[in-house]
Length: 361
Length: 228
Image (cartoon, rainbow over all chains, first blue to last red; front, side, top):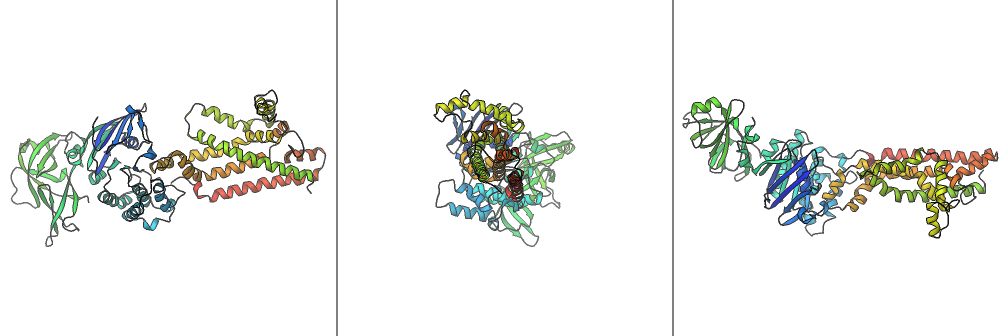
């Protein structure tokens, strides 16, 4: 069994569905459980919460053991220091927003900081104007923000989120997403986040677990996982790399911002944020092209030296190339013909031209 | 107008119905909760037993209760052992018979109400540190309020209206077992139609009023709406 800040090892058999997972997750940041419906990601999350009780299981967080079936230990859900956000907000319909927020607080040992946390959470999620409302009078996005706040005010040891955006339309998703990002920055609570959306993986994940048919297909830090050529993420036509960097300058004349990543910097269309702002950028593999020599005259701003670290052919005449650029990993999708004409192979130094990037946050 | 015998019958009916309703709620709530949540193979049998009074002729039910409560029946032997004596033709016997007779009218609305709540609010409460018992009182009871209202009113009203079981188990003893429905029967037997009219009409108005109040309250109950 793996060990780490969060250790989760479950074997569950419901006849038609089996779950077998042995995971060690980091004690901070967002760990995303990613997979199609039926992959077992929600069941795995429910096992962590104690909402399912697998025949064999171990769950430990920062030295606290919540389940150890070998020693017949099973801490019931209501005695675990966790926050849980359901896919449907699942607010109590007979209680106001304020009473929903107080529900858990009233049941934990009173600490002088309770009121402070409540205020901070209400502020963070922007729900102070909703406190007197009944849940049925909230929009889907508001309801989900209240649900997140309700879990967060308990200042839990871990926050478990089951597709909190899945039931919302695109506009509501964009309304809630910034709060999720702020939450991670302002509260140092490890989050386990279930989703089937690649976009949410790109935006939120620090650590990624890919589930398939009740098994862990692969897990690791996001950068490594996106660069794994054997995984569907890299083979997908929307494959992309995610870089995290800091704004180091603005060029007002050309409306550009300079962003420093791990050993490499990019010029990006003007970003409305100050120096030192941390941000996350997505570079689609289809927006990256390769040349053997430094292009002398090109309209593309971001041309960088890089080294090929791996290649794989897909089924549709394309080659996926993985490169190291500074200390960052980059994917490029090119045609197999180009790959052969250029004689691409591992360890070959090349130049990458990045045609476009998108700012995730 | 109503004579002294009518008023005694009304008062007795009210006492029996109130006491029975309280007992049915105490007994029916855990039973309905169990029936709504269990996967047990006993669930089908239990459901069928609870629903029996809905389809059985009251005289059949009354007949078997009479035998079971009698000195040779299992209930009768138990009550005699406890020093209570036998139950037939007593107030206690009538209450017990009423509870069994009207139980489905309490259990079924409660069971439907509990099932309708679903597991989601229970799980939400568990993740917010509420123990199962705490959850029952702080989440299930408020959400099942319309069910409790229906159960209370139907249980009470149905007990008021029973006749066959009363006649079999309780007989026709003034101020002890002579309830309104029996009193009406007595009036009709004696051809006192105007006396019968007062009581029968009263019951008619009572039943209609109770149901009217029930349905208008249920219509305006916010928590009877689907869970959000």
